[in-house]
Amino acid sequence: MSRKQRDVLSVEWVKLELIRTAYATRGGLFARMDPRVVLAWYLLLAIVPWLTHDLTTITLLFLITAVSAGLARVGPLVLGLFVFGFVTDFVYSFAAAWIFGGDAHTALALLEITLKLSTVSLASVAAFVSLDPERLSTGLLALRAPSLLAFGVSYGYRMMPILFEEFGTVFTGLRLRAAPARSGMLGVPSLVRWGRLAVEAFYPLFLNTAKSVRTTVEALETRGFTADQGRDLRIARLRVRTLDVAVLTVTTAAVAAAFAVGARFPLV
Image (cartoon, rainbow, N blue to C red; front, side):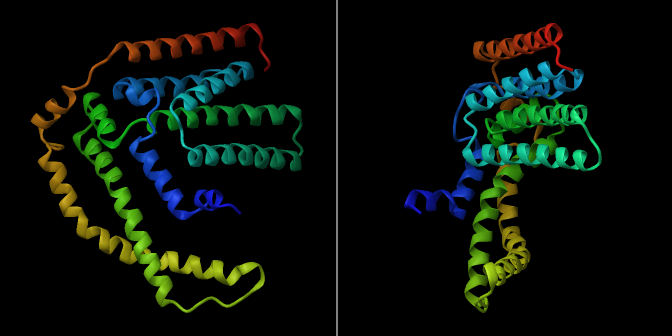
């Protein structure tokens, strides 16, 4: 295995990919848009798949969200997990239906619900990988969401790097102190040992993380995350620009076209 492949499969790479996803560092089309418009775009594509049973329309809606995910520059880790879940979910559902006497109509019904769920999932991925914690919480405040909800979203995102670092530190310390695993078939004892150490790491993980909670909360409150005046200052920066209107208009037109094509060439 090459060095590049080892880097891709490492735990450190997974950690960095998750942080890049949470903090929207990849850029992309939606990262340049107003967070309120991004949330409206997401709600549009999250609702319309449930308004039809036509397979042609649902397939076209899935393709729209797939293109959107590409424009949002979704990372390989999240995209790989999505593809794996999409394939395994359909195969599992189809196998269960076939075992219990299903036919082609059952397979089409399962394909319909799988495509609907996948469309909503891709829309979620495209939208939320493009919003960093502060922009997301500011957008929620501008939409009159409770201040506590916006504060919790921003605080939760900011705790992620701390949790990752603390887990790595605690897990490494437990590995160094624990007895080495015995040799066994297919490395099962090593897997059992790693699983046990991962469970044991959770208590010291949260104990160590709690030390950073007060500092983080005070820093966020100092920036006005829970004050009414701070809310007005934060949402004052939001602007709906030409790009926002264009993306929302094109998406609405594409959704309408998908319904029109589905009505003209229905499959189910």
